[in-house]
Image 1 (cartoon, rainbow, N blue to C red):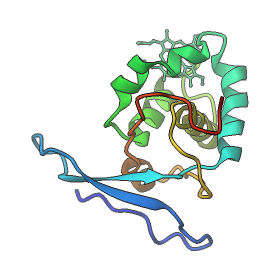
Image 2 (image 1 turned 90 degrees about the horizontal axis):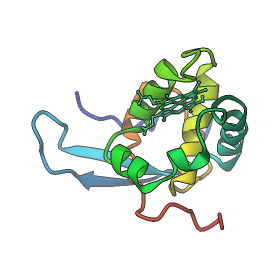
Image 3 (image 1 turned 60 degrees about the vertical axis):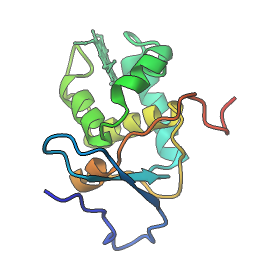
Length: 147
Ligand code: HEC
């Protein structure tokens, strides 16, 4: 299935910076994957931070999901992979108990604390958009705006 970049959202102007990255062809993977920068807002990530503090922090310290191993593990996968993992398995003691938007907010928080730039577009729980958002974490985590 070709990767489609959602440029059809009706009510907001899309101002995504989209970089097309050639990925070495491996097996049946699509040859080109979109990296979408600024695909979430600071507000969304701030909501995610609060939810993380309330629902996840009892088992996870922030550093569990912001360390180099975490980034290495998730680099090259998509926001959808991360979203689906969290949505279907977390919180560990009550998976699937939160709303899609809450899971999405947490994902944007994780993108932000792992160094991906925020922007003016909300990340939405649209599988096309999530699938097109390839995780491409910088080697050092903190975005310039944070510490
Ligand atoms: C009751 C404890 C508990 C809670 C609450 C919990 N988790 Fe987890 N989480 C775990 C355990 C245990 C694992 C390891 C599971 C495994 O590896 O099979 C895990 C694994 C993960 C992973 C995979 C880590 C990796 O290295 O890829 C992520 C991401 C994650 N949790 C996110 C969350 C988020 C987000 C929340 C809040 C919505 C949450 N967890 C709440 C216990 C918990």
